[in-house]
Image (cartoon, rainbow, N blue to C red; front, side):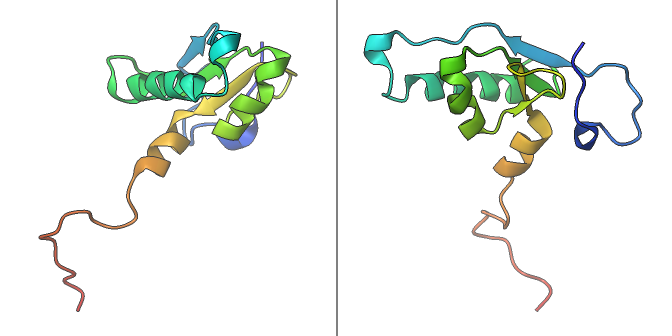
Length: 112
């Protein structure tokens, strides 16, 4: 039912839907919150989506009101029609993980 912002559409692909993983409920016991556990669990899920056997373009969540800011800080955006359902574009995540320069100590700059 929700639609993506036009900026999130895959160029040249007119699919009616894109592959998406829904994280139904990610929760940390209140006594253990504010220790980075939620961030670690979400990072683990994102890493699994990038490297695991799943094929997806987006990760989607239906957070409680108290968790909206948590997901916003990580980079989740709102679907256009929804006030609470959020998504993370995996292409954006993959691009952020690519180094700007070679990390290979043996590579040479051949342009000089």
